[in-house]
Structure formats: C-alpha cells, structure tokens
Image (cartoon, rainbow over all chains, first blue to last red; front, side, top):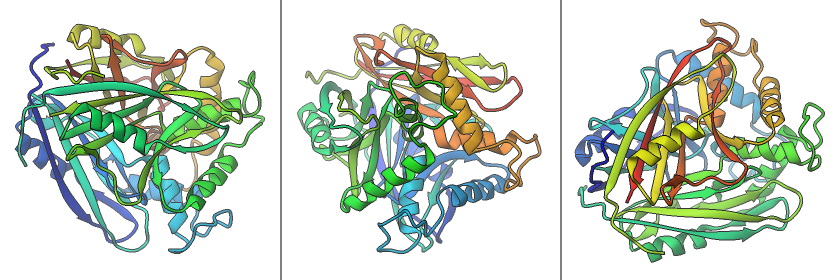
Length: 145
Length: 145
Length: 145
C-alpha cells in the first residue's frame, strides 16, 4: 500500500428518467464521471436527491433477482397499507418513502486504477419506488489522487 | 466538471439530546460544520457513535411521514418480541439494535458550493430508537477543496 | 475545528474466509489499514465486492445481539420462501441477496487521531448470508491528512 497525495475532487450530476417502479442500472454513467475526473485511486459517492427512490448495489446478471427484490418489498411494505396516514400522492406514496429508508439514497464505492471497483456480480442501480415515471437527479462526487 | 485540488479535511462533533424514541432534525448542525470547514466541493460523512439510534435522510415537509415510518418499524420490529434474548435494558433494547442495522449509522452527502447538497424534500435526521432520552454523539467529517 | 490539507489516499484489501452464515468481526483488520495509511484525520470506506454478504456496524459486547439479529432476519427473509424464483444456488440464494440489500455492502467511518473512530459498543462486522463458507474480498480506502 502506498499513501499518495490526494489531490483531486470532481463532482458532476446526471438525470435518470424512470418509467415507474423498477430498476435502472447506472453503473456506466457513474463510470463516465469517474473516468472524466482523472482520479486513479480513491472513492466515489453517488447520491440521489429524492426521498422516494433508492440507490443500491445489486446482483447484475440474472434479472430474476430484481424481480424477487420487488416481490419481497411489495409484501413487506405493501401499497395502500392502512397503517399509513401520508397518502396525498396515492397508495404508493408512503411505501416509497419506507423503501427508500430501508435501502438508502447514498452509496460509496472504491475507485481503483481509474475505475469504479465493483465485484464481478455487482451493478449500481437506481430503484424507482413510485408507480409513475419520474426524473431523478443524481450527484456523483469523486475524491482521490 | 473540473478536477481541482482536494486540499481540505475538517472534522468536528456535536451531541444530540434526544427525548426518547423519535426524530431530531440535524440538517442545520451538519451545515454549520460544512460552512466552518471552508470546503466548497466535496463530500461530508455524518456518523453516529451508537448502536441503538440511526442517521437517515427523510422527507422533511410533512411530519406524518415520520409518524408513518415509526408505525411501520413498530410493526416490523415490535418491542418485546419473544424471539429476542438480548433484553437486559428492556423490551426496546434489541428492537433498537435491529432498527439501527436496518437504517444505518453513517451517511455521506455531497458538498456543493460550500453547502450540504440535499434535494428539496430531504432532511438529515437522527432517529432515537430507545424509549428513554439519550445523549448521542455525532462526528462530522468534510473532505474536498 | 481546523481545516487542514487533505494530502493522503491509501487503499488496500483483504479476504475474509467465512464459515457459512454468521458474523466475522473485521474491526482490527480495518484498523491495520488505517494505521498503515498514515492518515491522522479523515474517513475510511470499507467495501465488500459481493452481493450475498453484508458489512455492518453492530454492538460488539454481547454475542446474543448477533444471534437475535440472525433470528429477526431469518423470520423476515426466510430461506426457501416460495415468492422467490431465483434459487439456482439453493434456498438461501435469494434471501442472501435481500439481506445484503437491507443491510448494505459499504460503510464509511471517521478516522480520528490515526484510528478508526467507533463508539464504545460499536464493531465492524462482515455478515455472511450464505449457508456455505465463502471467501469475501474487502477493499479499504482511506482519505484525509
């Protein structure tokens, strides 16, 4: 291990147009920001500026995994649950907030050799929890040398 | 995007006096540490030194959202659940640990133009999971330029 | 608070040999990477390159807490749940992915006075969610001055 000067910070954003509830892979978009930053070794933060969608690292090979994630969360946090009072925007309003709390809106991933360092089966996803399409703003911040 | 020298790190802490189970917004306290750091662009880590409260980013407009979060978690991780053996400190002891694991004790948020960059409806909250009041120590670390 | 030059980044990895489902404390291994980095003040990211184990900060004193965590997750995300389609690797395959999503694969912790800053009762753990033993690769990245 070498401790070397940390002399770069870069920050950029992009928008994800979702088509309603479901997953959008953003691994490549994050990788583009990291490549443009010129950072070789460090970390990258990916942050969603919203409270009803999530950022997560999930299995990237078999889409059935994401179907199963959706099924588990639909049972654990059902739309229209009568314990919820906050439903101005519909039966998926409060469940979207609970899902976002359970899965998070901020990720930190290592940058290694100028690339986002992910495992073989890992991908970075935005998970839209609302039933309707939305425009989701993401900020990517890279720190390192 | 400009890649510019990352030449600052700043770290400071504060204590949150909770009044028992419930939410305390700490967005402004985090913002004060970021402002004092002089960092213009980068990221900030907010970390809780405890295992029975959480840090989370939640909807900041309608308090009913936080009431509903509490209701969902009270049902999913009920106090006094008979599957729990660790109950030295009462029926809320182990549920507080499970809630803290599910929601996390560490956040990373972008710093942009010298400020914590949050979405319009996002606030940073400490969620006390114990029924009694506690003093919760938070460390804030800012990195960037 | 002093804002001082952020002039170091260090990155290293290690492998955790798990013995099947359960917890392995990695606090000391993370501390070694931080000590070797020479960073005095900053933050450290711990990242798992897998989708069926987690990294989490949990109570480090009473092992019953970890037994209870396991019991709660075993009930909330049961092996062999018939809602899951993704089961090529067995009844613990998809539950491992759901558990990893709920608890996360990336942690950020402050570095203070050259050490990982944790609360008195906090430890850093790898939680293996598969029933069989696995080799889990962890990347540790330290940034600060």
